[in-house]
Image (tube, rainbow, N blue to C red):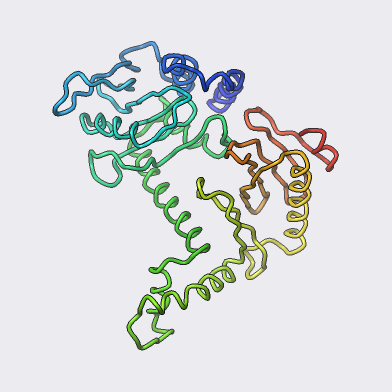
Length: 340
């Protein structure tokens, strides 16, 4: 059976205990969620030569410190894992604990998890010092697996290659920074960006660039960028730092045809109108590609409900509830109401 099929079965199995997970102890979390996850990745979680519980990570001033699990190869740790109970929010405090363990051995990957959220860390900034931010993170109950499954697959036992993982992590981190920076600058251009354009030889201000000049040119910079990118932006959630970006103009051949775009937007608006009469408070994050538009739907508490995929070739609608294993094909607004 393929990894994808095994992972799908794992998701279906843990979905049945989803609403109990919040009350799990740390040991219950390990048994019901974490160990099965690594078993799907191909590791024998009962072989201590491969998957060692309570692995000793002596810290400079403290001996006998133990990390919850270490994945071993030829007797050396290649991944260390710190486990917390499912109901515990992962914060800097837990990261600091893993940070101490990371520098005591030569492994390059550290995972912090509560069985629901998985955070993957490395030492991309300074060798042998764990980064402050994970290079990869997902929520196994809330996120669409189609978005993260290819990244998870690279940690499978049979294909784990640390050089390949680190190489991808570097590019993933870079892409994340670029994406976040662009979104922030499209919302509110930074001083650095405005200063860059003011310093271009074509502008020729002839003066020293002051903070007043930057502030004066910020709005026109924002308008110019949005015109070039052909987008409108609606902030969805400050906490998630996510934004809904929609193509609204046709400035070059890379944008969709206007008639197609209008149809997709019309369907999106119809779906939003239907949901507003059923779900009191929700938000969307749009994901647009050449072939489809996917709407990720969240409650006001940032819990993902599911996603709607609008296929651009025939404007058909596919709906997937969070935790379900398959897509549902919907043909009308009535179908959407009945399905919800």
